[in-house]
Structures are given as C-alpha cells and as structure tokens.
Amino acid sequence: MNTVDSDPIPAGVRVTLAITRPDECPLATASADSGARVASVARTSCGSQDDTNTEFTVQADAPDTGVEGDPVFRTEEGVRYRCQCDAEACLADLVEGFGCPVSDVHAVDGTLYMVFYAPDTDRVRDIVAAARERFEDVTVRNLRQSGELVGDGFVSVDTGRLTGRQREVLALAYEMGYFDYPKGANAEEVAAELDISASTLSEHLAAAQEKVIGPVAERSV
Image 1 (cartoon, helix red, strand yellow):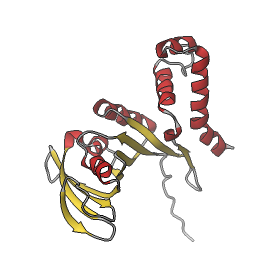
Image 2 (cartoon, one colour):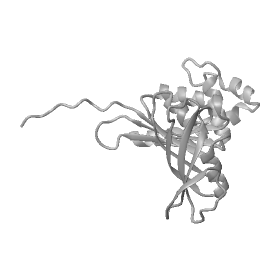
Image 3 (tube, helix red, strand yellow):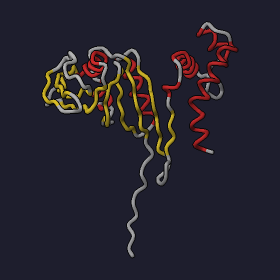
Image 4 (cartoon, helix red, strand yellow):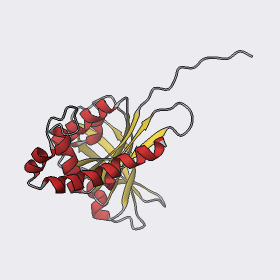
C-alpha cells in the first residue's frame, strides 16, 4: 500500500484576549446594557479603510434591550443587530493587521473576548503590546501552545486566575529583567519600584508563578 508523507503541523499559539469595557465598542456596550451575552459576530469592511460593518446577536429572551444598532433579524436565540464600527477602535482589525485572522468574538458583562491563532509567542507579544497602546485594560485570558502532532498536546495557561496586583507585579518584574539570566534587577530593586518590601514581592511572585506555571508542570509530568 502506498503511503503519502504529510508535512508536520507547525507549532502555534491559540490566544484569548479580554478587554474590559473598551470605549466605542458596540459589542461590549450591548453586553453591558442588555445584561446578555453577545455572540455570533460577523464583520466586513466593504472595501472601506475607516469603517467596518458588524453584525452580532444579543442572546436574550427579551428583544427590546436598548442596544445601539439596527435590528435585522429575530430568532429564538435573540436579536441580530447591525452597526458600523470605527476601524481605529476595533480590536479585531488590529489583530488581523498582524496577519492573524480572528476566529471568535463575543462579549459578556461589558468585557470583549477575542480568540485568534498566532504562529508564535513573539507575534502574540507584538499584538498584546499594540493592543495595550490603544486600549486601557487588555489581558491574555487564555493561551494554549501546540507542541505535539498527535494526542492532546496542548498546555493551557489561564492568566485570568491572576489578581490585578499579581499581573502588575509579574509585568514589572519581567520588564525590569528580574527573570533574566543574569538578572537585570534583583528583588529589592523591583520591590522598591512597587513601594513594597522584598518579602511581599516574593509572596506575590510565588502565588502568581504557581498559577501560571502549575498547569504547565502538571501537563509535563
């Protein structure tokens, strides 16, 4: 029997970004105003570089939710709306500008969630950095890296388990080179920037690292 060799599937990264109450985002606003989940999002630029036509479904029993947009369809699932979004204020356009098509968009309680696949973590860092320049509260809520061709092969790191303070401490320690070898900054220097003691810094880092590294270590056992 003839066999055909197939190319190995390249390792990639599946990312879920979350933005808390982004300004001028009709999806986040609709989820906050209606108290319902916003999903089934579809977009088209129609050749425009400035505006994007966006449709979304507000999943609620009561259709009259005061959502800003034109209702275009009604089902048992909810009401379908259409509106125009400013491309400059659209996270999906930003992500796709880095060559990563967005695979899912939804909003819950005013927070916008966006799922996409990136070729590597360097591309993820570039996207997150660009998003944080445009939006105030951007977090990586889930990151899964494909490292195997067969089997489960995914490691899930849910940064949503971190408190805001833990994220702040980790981010600053990373920026100052605390995790570099040799270290770019020691514990006392990082603690001084945060105006806390070195022992308090160690407690924050230990708790944060356990939440982030724990799933990776468990998957590797």
